[in-house]
View: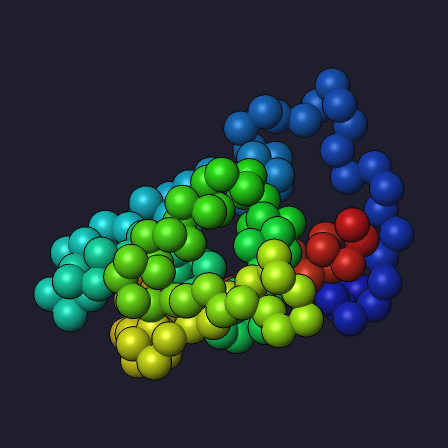
Length: 162
């Protein structure tokens, strides 16, 4: 059996007439994302150390992109996170009102702004990240580390093929 590091050409994993609509990898990834998001939202709301931050899973994603991936514009966030501009603007407004993010005018243009995570946001991020880790660990009960790494490699391969 080839290892994950070997390139495997398999263009016909699914035949349209044989593909289950609920149990194919795309549908399962989508379902897992919905479950993760709901569980993260619940974790943030119920954890006494996080509830006061009033942050959602989607808002955590924005903090993560700005802080860890150096994405610093609403337009870029929309592209990376697949949100429309209106929804993104409202989420940024909420994070700004909570003091976790700020809009900073760009010096070279009168219209552009960059996004920055505030000191309060930077302090909150590790607590939120720990909440996400708790959710993932709960959802991965009964799954070995090797299986998780294999799944990560498969997903990375899918992304590389995009």
